[in-house]
Length: 406
Image 1 (cartoon, rainbow, N blue to C red):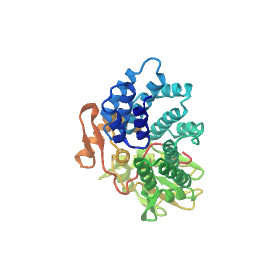
Image 2: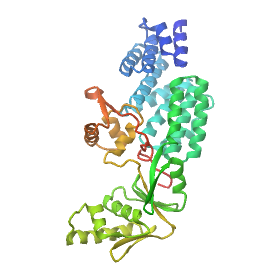
Image 3: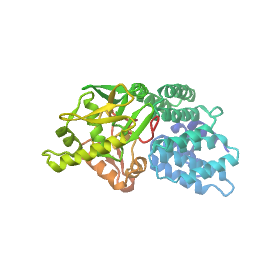
């Protein structure tokens, strides 16, 4: 490798893309094309970066498998940054295997980091933890160690393990400072702010107050019976009952939880569960049926008792009942939770991350755009959606991935 290529590679490692381009901008050989692609990615021109890396991969000869694999890894990183979650993970796995077979352990570890970051985005936390268990970050360079610790922190935040998240972010900050890359330092600081952002509202005894993640963690361990409107579950420290696919039952239990220790009139329950403005006998009969179903679902945690004017929720083991609600509640809150990270997302990537159909996501984006809450740029397959971060918006509790005891 000649001196200009070496100098450009070192400049990129320091986070100096302009210094790298000064050395290789006029060259069209395969190594120079690859370095130009990485430099353009660091400068934010992701489309040009992807084209340069693909050209470089084709330009490397058949005996340069390692160089081609590195181009694949770089392209995968661009796909992750641009939220192209449909990018073929098999190609990244093959590139990582090639790098490991040829002794390039650092780039192989970087490829592994990219894969776990993708899995984290789509909420597959168990797979992330299994992969991280096999990866030793000690020999990695500072930038890769920082990326590794950010993933560890991301898992801990999703699991509501705030102490572990703070420890990982402290290690990430130290590694980012050693790397001296401003963008990486900023990413660590942005993640750290999540721990200080309002993540939910506590509704109890007719009052409500905001909670940060640490307070949410303490609430779930407090022994209270929690009606969790972020995940649509009812839980205490020993059991979790999901009502995510039973919206009527969850609407009923939430109304009962908000009123505890009092009861809820039948008319209020009919309005909350069935949106019935003028209830007739059929509505009242259906309410009795749904209350029976709710009793059966909650039999381990609570009982639903009839009162003179309606129904009340009575915990079996817990001393109190509280409701945990998102600070912002609207129909498309889950889509906004992803867009609140400030990155640009395609509608197909959001569909993959949320496990919804592309058409459903597109309708949600159109509604949010009409309300002025999101904006798009580009056309066709290059169209991306984004929004400035919303202060106090729940960027964690609405994202996919189980919480403790789920």
